[in-house]
Length: 234
Image (cartoon, rainbow, N blue to C red):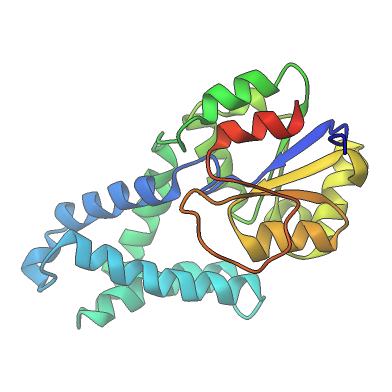
């Protein structure tokens, strides 16, 4: 069976191209030491980061399901993390959130192979991003990490009014890029948000699964290294 003639490649941003874990860890560790959280009873940066990720993940899940809004997510993630360590300091939580939002997007760590793969794809394909992240934050990440030159359109949940895996964001992406689903391919690391969402919208998908996690999801293609994408589309 021949490979479909894809013309438009849509990438998730965080954890697919922009190294979310590494960039977030660096920023959170800097905040931990800057504000001497060891003196507030948090024994290590790793402990602080572990619990932040737990609270942040729950809040992001609630945000995706429209149970809370952006302001609530931002207000609660550091407040709940600090409260876990019996630090009830609303001002400090607000400072952490503001500095995290300011500093994390300046980080430049990318998933291995990102620039090499995008450089090879750009002459032959229209490249786009579909992201659930906050629009301005995602734009800063893209610009600061040198990704901006590769992408024709940046479709965000804030800009479109819809979040992956909602079919409406994929329909919006087609309209904005003047593409059709048969020539479009979604590449992402989240089986529900990226892969199932694109599949339900009628798109083919590439599941980027660097850790080789086992799953029962129906996917069109699966890769463990971004460079494997080249064999699929070219």
